[in-house]
Length: 135
Image (cartoon, rainbow, N blue to C red; front, side):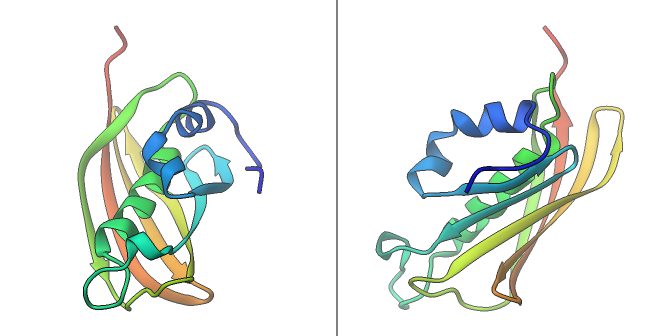
């Protein structure tokens, strides 16, 4: 699916993001301070317990976070991130990560990302961003 909305910094960044592309992560919506991405859980993502490895869920949420905080003309990186895993994720699940900016002051920001399978919340992620100084 083609992303809708603002196409500035996030779209350009995502277009060259090899990690997200390798996992089949797709943008559903990109706009200033908000992003929605999706990913289907595949066989290589399954751990020894028969569920998705949490690192893949984290990566999806982190990619949505990056898209929400990278405005056109800025380069913004994660300063801190944490995740709470609330439900196991299984092979074939379609996960949707929705990132929303909570506050942005100066070069710092706070973003909340909810990862869902259908209507069920499977993880909650909070990221703190820092915009790099222009060179």
